[in-house]
Length: 339
Image (cartoon, rainbow, N blue to C red; front, side, top):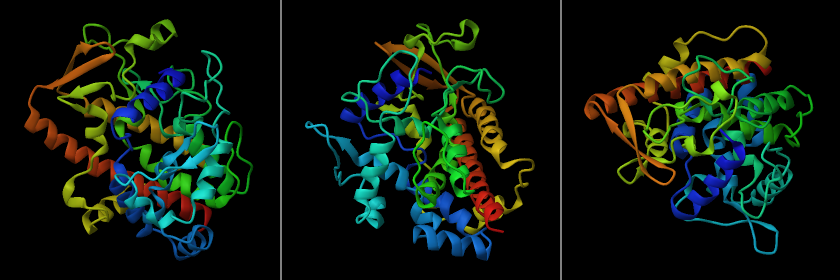
């Protein structure tokens, strides 16, 4: 989708509803917890030396930086919101570093629609968390609408490059391996949330629209990662951010066992993120089976389900599978770099 529109939509939504965090803090901690239990001893030591915490604790960091906001005088400040602060308390002494990260990654994005009005959006770093590939596609491809050089795949690759001792490509500013680790501990989890990669574009009748047919995205079809699709009063995206309640915020043995049984990736590490995004697009198609949509207002749609009980059961299974994948992939990056 249009990244400019998506950032503006995110800013508007943030003013009225809690921001959408892929998997939420508990989900990111579960992903990190899975990875922590699959690390080599060397990887554990390197991570502890660089960030001072385990991956479970590090997972929410990149959402915590969303509390850095532009002030009326143009400065940036970390604004504590008690509703979202608990997973961020381990970084209470890290606010200056968060502000620095946001400042360096605020206006480097280039949008085809024109110059970003930085007084209205919440920073280019917000776009690092997602792609918007139409779910009609069967893979991730840079030629598809909804991708660009500051999306989730690009951000993941940039952070991996820094961990490998290489400079981050523009437009990313990643000053050191600590920032890169914090980013990867989060982004690899984002990569497995179906609606952070696969996107719904809907017409006035609620039918799928295809931005790749005309090679132009019609803003009226954008659902902002399903944040503009509602199940009652709840954004459909938010429902997918939630994880099964019985998982808590630490991976249980069965989830770790699932992750451990997953096959390792082959080929160059630089290709992993695109491969993972392709997998998530297919999962997004699975995640939307049994749903239909109708226009419910200006720029909004409502979702309905053929069988809600069956849908929730299937969603629960998908979420468990995706969380395990994320933990396994995060550990694989670390173990490959620090065997």
